[in-house]
Image (spheres, rainbow, N blue to C red):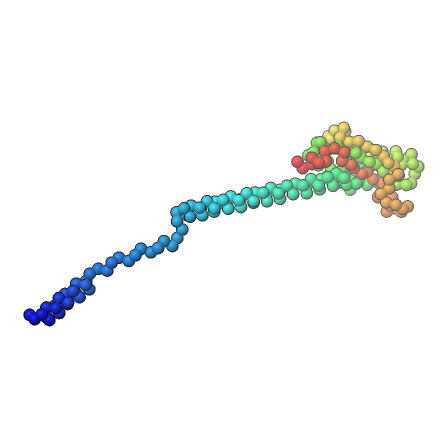
Length: 195
């Protein structure tokens, strides 16, 4: 065999062997995700955010409940202060007056520390002495209503102003109707309503 053939045969062998040789393995890819420490920090941050959101929601719900309670307490105080009215020359409880007194009765039962002053009034007709007596009868009529349902009389005081403190001015039936009344003043326990 000639030298050139030998070189060609050797070259062919090298080419065949080189073509069959395995390629070196590829480089492993560079890490693209977070490290274990970063993952743990992210998990802790997520837990903290969830706890903060839950605490904020609890605070919001508590504030809403407090606001509802305060609105209910204010409505109860307003109901206690609501004036009741009487017919001309009468101290008998009317049906509309009874409805208002029953609403007050429930509040008073649920709030035993509440005390009221009952202020009796009359319109301008009649003598001053008569109207003082009539205002007193009206206040006493309301007190008897409450005590008739088992409330302690010590929770109530009464005063009569007769015609001296009119709610409406004028000598008309509309003005007189507004002046024949008992007004209510919360003298103790009003701030404890609803607590």
